[in-house]
Length: 317
Image (cartoon, rainbow, N blue to C red):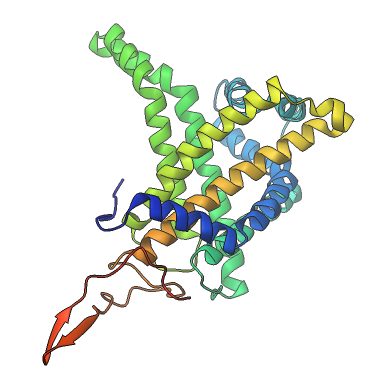
């Protein structure tokens, strides 16, 4: 992970401006739309993933999927997810059909919505034509599915691979201990890389990785904290089944998707703020790097003197 030069950019001012831009760009509205689209495309997207998994024959995938769902999702949301996993586990072929094409199209619609939200964060209009944007969204959907599949393979096959390596070199205890300690940090780093890739390809702007690293770190850290906090809140204080009846689990899942989408967009806003405030970045509304920003000067007694930039002041839109 590469970080930009943040000297001269006070952290508290970056955070304040990030929140301000989040509100000004109406990212909560985008998060609501993304949450609905995620819920709408969740089960078709799972069908698409299962079709891919059928080709690779990953062992114990459904057990891993159920375990990870229990770690992340609140109990009431699991009431909706577990029956779907059971049905998928019993499915026999036929998934790669017209239904998969529809599922891929549905999931890619959420990706196109995310592309629009990322453009709003950078204050740029969508310049990619429809004939280019739709194929890109489908490619990105396949890419996201591939990353989820790779994560599943790592979690399911990782222990077996490490045990095999340990048996070959004769260091079973050491390697197993190292894997136990480093597994979750490695997963968190991979999540940050995956989020950074989303920030890199989604908006219609030229990007440098050093300007998207801070938001990636922020998004993953805040998402983990928010997920744990929301799960504890739902389990301890809230009884959505009593309030909403049979649709309580759907409401919980929708709220969780909203929190996740809002956190992802918050990270994008931080990246945009840091880049716009940095002397090495672009101005709001610019899509490409056009060289260094011109340095301001003042004339004193006929001589020009450079003026240090004031990164704490927001650039005019």
